[in-house]
Length: 66
Image (cartoon, rainbow, N blue to C red; front, side, top):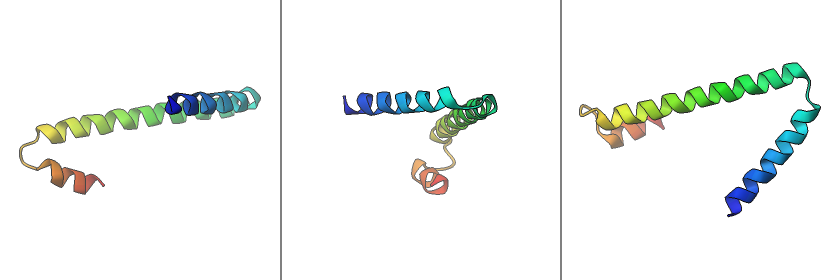
């Protein structure tokens, strides 16, 4: 429940700032969000591949990616 409240508070604060931002700033924010999403997807793909790769142990992968 606390996580939901924190998230809602963050979203409200972000929205208030975005309402006052210039258009180019909004475009920058959108681009950063897209980059972050892409990086997260790549990380998930790497984790999936590492779990299915029998040439390296999961522990070794975690140490290398840390």
